Image (cartoon, rainbow, N blue to C red; front, side, top):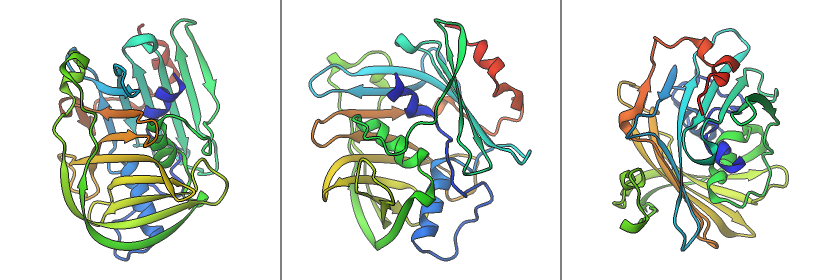
Length: 306
């Protein structure tokens, strides 16, 4: 359960990047890393509501090689629109299927970049809210899916050294979880099955942890226009140990070049453990002015139905 929770805790430690970060006029390694944070944490939005319908929801699909995939369905509610000088964002995730059905996690991230996040989990079996400790940023996770969480969501910018290796035009043949008809159900049959290719100009950005981590360094391939990361390779002793591919689409109604949303796929090159995180476009609702900030509260957690 811990791995799946980590997958969807969307707005965690942003370092010193916030919604005021302008589109860059000069480029260097540190500036690129800030822009990547901006995109990954969706600072171009006031809020985003991913509410499930009977037919569609967030899908997290995880598969061990040779076995039938496991599917988790969820909803997510993100709010970046705070001006109290204390709260930077709140993120609520509700699981609606399987053994985790009815479990909710509310994450509060503070303006103070050095302050630990607040994580509250609603446990439906106990009918209680429990506080969770902030996940370690240097754990050697065994599942390929959590690598995205660690790299894109948990790490502060100050914890890595960045180097702009080069700028290059590259072809990307994105990874894809290909399912046989016998492996599909009414939800997984909606996963994209056609492999996607793309040619783009990218910054090749190397990030090296300043302290011991589960990898020695990672390489991000960052779009020079949108600052979206198409691919990340994680290396240990100069050998790739995890790969994440992300396919990006423009968020409608937002003029910012960086307003992009991703469908991502990860794989462990050795074990071939795969994960897909997919959000059907039909459930994406952004900048909804009707929902009140009080929705992101412990009270809402307690109202979650099993």
